[in-house]
Image (cartoon, rainbow, N blue to C red; front, top):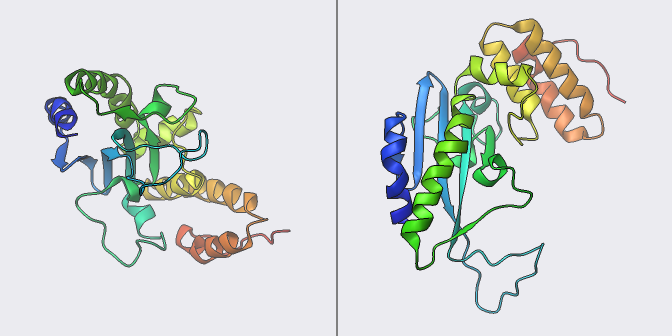
Length: 216
């Protein structure tokens, strides 16, 4: 994996990313951090049976994750709200996310093998990151950029809470009416998820919403 990470590091540095281990970060505005991360496949214990389409043997393989984290979403998320927004973000804390394979248009989750020809794989990944991952990050790692992509109907992220993220970004940008409308649309869509709807009701006042409609 070190060979692959080293192959992409010069390009990432040219695009103002800094590195920790196998993760890269860039912040082009306060409270918004872009992330690119190399993830190794898990090591299953001996005797684990591979089941095609359900449980794959990913040992010796890796994938590439991209994501964006926003401070305003961090501050309301139950998993992170008790802590200050960090200066370096890891992929699992991102609020928008994709994998490189998704951005390439692959129909299945893509993992690359670390076999004998690691140099060739490294060159391939570096080219794919330049072609697919960096443009995706460029269009989403500032608040105005991600709102523009959202308003144009572009595929912003696979994040299931995406409308909530967008509502908070709208609020941060001073667009209270858009924040309210986006939040309410999301809230109404959760009428069958009682626990999530209840949590949304607790954070609605942060968006200036004190008159939530009854769901049902």
